[in-house]
Amino acid sequence: MELTFPVGTLDDVFRKEVDEFYGGVFGWTGVDTEVVGQLCHVMMTGDPNGDFILLAESPKPMSSPGYDHLGLLQDTRTEVDELLEKCKRWAEKDDRVRIKEYEDLVIGDLVVHAFYVKHLLPIYFDVQCMERDGTPVPS
Image (cartoon, rainbow, N blue to C red):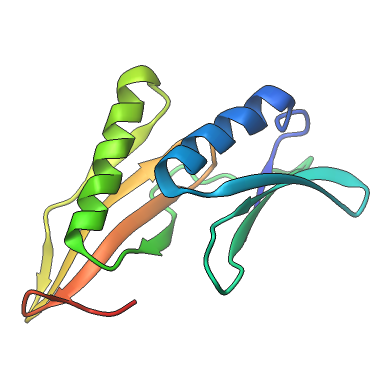
């Protein structure tokens, strides 16, 4: 996924802050790279499939004023809760962190346990796990 920002956004301070939050909470690694002559920043998720998020500048940056989001499926409820706690601790020291907590969504025997978080990047992340009859649904 590519996320675009206004020209001038991806300075050293911004990239460092992105790396600190997403590295500290999700374990992602930020790497500077050049793409078509432009300095960009790649957030490597550590997923064995090689998933990443490319941060780039554009004269027409993206806008996501609502709850547009990318899903981050976790294996267990405990993992979701641990990530939520990390986000809350970060929010105590940085008021730019946005967290939206949800009640469990129950659909028949399927339970979705989730929260949304947004920080610095122009999109929310839906951190969730799915359980069927109390057993995690494999991701």
